[in-house]
Image 1 (cartoon, helix red, strand yellow):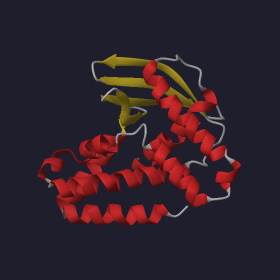
Image 2: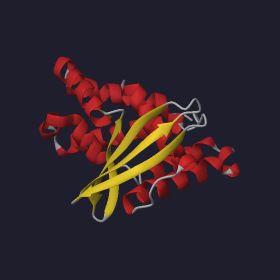
Image 3: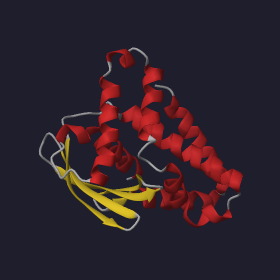
Image 4: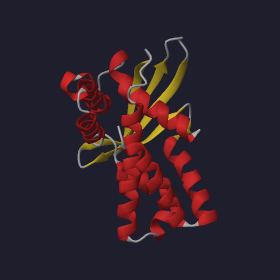
Amino acid sequence: MLKRSALYMITALFLASSGYAGVANGVINEVKSTVDEVVRIVSDKEMKKNDQKRRQALKKTISIIFDYNEMAKRSLGKHWNQRSAAERKQFSELFASLLENSYASKIESYNNEKIVYLKETIDSDYAEVKSKVVTAKRDEFTLDYRMINQNGKWMVYDVIIEGVSLVSNYRTQFNKIITSDGYPVLVKKLQTKTNELKAP
């Protein structure tokens, strides 16, 4: 489920520009502006000639909308408070690399899917953008972005696919690894996975 959820999140963010048909409000536009830049990068003829340059440009762009530190903190859950400042920094960087490289490696999975933004709701410093993804076969699934206002900038801290939280999914698996094998084993697993995804 973790791999499936991550793939849907990655694919849907990329495909958002293909079927933008919802309201054009502030929080939704935060997502759309990033998606437009992603599309520009993957469509650039010069970028296609240099995989490494394209990968770096994609990672830089998607980091604009995803709050990796907040996602890492929530994914580690109760174990976050037990970590030192150095460990938190390392974990956040590994978590960011995991999502960035997963995104970049799956970005060419386009298959005529479209995403339709339905509405946004704002409650103080938190917001949610509700959307649905429509496949080429007309199948649909819901995909919602949970966002937090960080110094005036709306950032994604969780993605909900068909009612399942990506962060909660990670938290369950991370907790299982830490409980059974210890925190160092989780770090090693993340490092291994990140290295596997690094090469374009």
